Length: 86
Image (cartoon, rainbow, N blue to C red):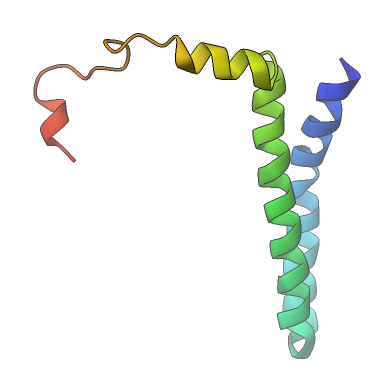
């Protein structure tokens, strides 16, 4: 499924890109604010890719909306005592 693989690749590239940019921040500390900004932008892009990946795996946006509308009210109910732990 090539349309799902692109999301996985974006997520997997997070670790090497994050580590290289962290090393660059340590090496060139005068430019650290700019490098951190780029790193944070890529991190937000990866979060967006992860949410898109979840939507695709769950059957698409329309299917996900239908699944959430048809969710029974008893699904997700905690066992006795856990609802007070918040």
